Image 1: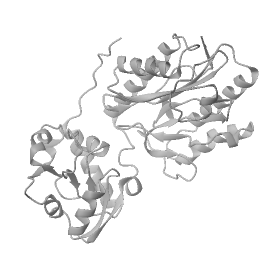
Image 2 (image 1 turned 90 degrees about the horizontal axis):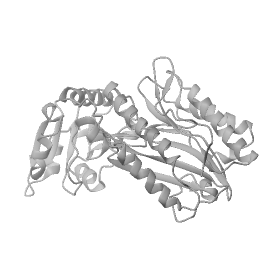
Image 3 (image 1 turned 45 degrees about the vertical axis):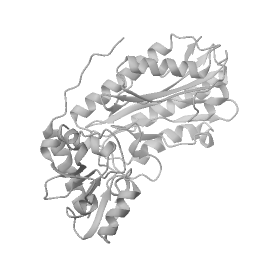
Image 4 (image 1 turned 90 degrees about the vertical axis):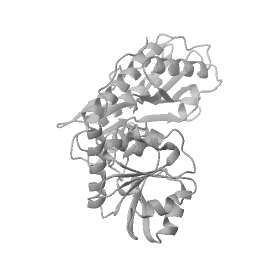
Length: 376
């Protein structure tokens, strides 16, 4: 079952273009620049993933009209130079005997508002602000929510491969025995299958059986799955650096009429959400389309989370499909459509696909059946 497919590598030109777009977007938003700490934004923009996120300052500085600059500890400079995007960067290394914040401050203006990656350590941000008291900062999620949202063709290829691996995992999990086994055992099967189909990181394997399925983020535990249980499966992680995330709900043995009806409502809602995807509409319209179906059938109060989230180098990122999100869909955006119904103390149902916006609609990256599967 090992996965041998390899994507086309990203090039220095790919990273150069991403950094340029980020700097231009910041300028258009009235920001003086973008400051990026180690984490998913840095990986997306440069291909550089530091070996460790420590108290030593590592900071990518992107400003319109200037060459990208990376402030990096001297002991990690060699690793940074090997990053794919390094040819598009100017490296500024520092030693432990020097002040890295003075070095970083010299790349910025004494005044201005900068966008800062969400996972920047307060230690670093406060020290930089102390040296530049005329500056202010905004999180990138708030200031530039579309920074990673629109994927290029190579990124879409990786997301499609991750989705296909998750689909293969689901097809295989249908063949294992559920009844008489702990949730944690089925979760371990899911993790092993994801890894076998090429995932290098497994982020979650939700197995919510019976009443546990009414908790959307239930962690697989020691509950023994019984015949007659509805079981929510939600699993994903990273393959080739890009995310998968899919949910299906199965039943151990034949379902009751009510269980089948609730599942049918969720399936119809999920279909409505996917049909609504097209360029130019607001993210909230996806949520509205799915939620309207569930509300129509009397379960509106039992749909207790947003309809979807973006996905890319992390499994959860902007944009979000939720009421109040007026960001417009554009081709290349990728996100989940995952409505659910949760009946406390009884069972839950969720169905989830990753969808990408195309020029004239949307395309699902998950293609497995959305019918209620019966397992043993």
